[in-house]
Length: 433
Image (tube, rainbow, N blue to C red; front, side, top):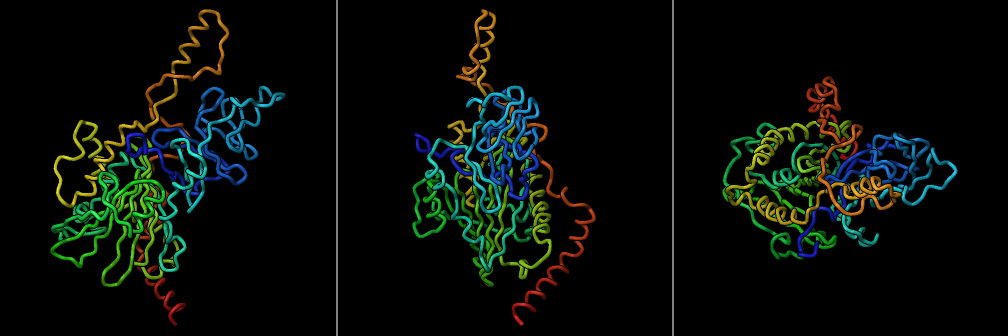
């Protein structure tokens, strides 16, 4: 939290890329809250630095990997572990000075993702305490199957968080995938705990305890239909500043589904969504070939239904509309989030650009014939951020569906049912016989 007691959007660990998508063959450019960042593998270890060459401010993400080090494509300066400059081709006889090293960001590789911390200066021990390990207690479960998907979206990340807190839109937006219009009925929400905008505690709730453990704030709401209390809707938990958790247990069968949804803010109108699914709803899915791909295709279909509305909502907000005009009980979670978000934005968490005043000073000194001290460049001042990305950046808006050929998607559509039946039969043959 900052000095006035409100959470900032920066003080957290952000998963930014799945481990399988980060190779030692090329750098990976991205942004978090507009901060330009580049990551790569150096001898198997993840290196994460500011995406700007200490020499001439060229983006390092358009560079190349040479013998395990990142080489800037402009003048060939090379960077290794911790972003240290290891070689300058135009001055090979000198050891690179400290000013030639990159600004490094703390990073971790856990749970199949690369995580980055861009928040306030903390000791390593304090940073590690903020890591949300408690969310992954089901990762090695013998009963729940894990799958993960990601998607880049051209919307504000907060719109997606509010959407994920809103089960009342399912019968209409997701007709044909998750629900149907005839499912619509009265829906209410109760607050289980809320440390985001109020001081409502629940010390016997595992999510409340976890949230307190990492020093963050959040809330949990439960949605229910008063006219049909047997209907399964679930618990919705928000962990500041960007994590959503949906937890549903089927009342009749006892089967369970958990979704961990990481809504990463890239720019004010762009985000990356990384989702971990844990479920035992589909019997035998642990043994199904291509199950993760099938889940990715289905996930895209559902997200596309949301995106049609959220992208339009984004346009209206840019035109000056308000995110909320009226609200009912079913909107409780979204309203709590928006109230906190508007307060958290006052801390100005977005990247504000590099200093400009130093360069103006250099120009004036050159006019006067003075010797310029380049170490003073960049001190003071600020400039507006353009949120532009280098041309090689992997952080793009390509739909996940484009990773699959039409023939593959057709095959999935035609054979998904057959695969499920075969997997169930195999499961019972091996484990039940």
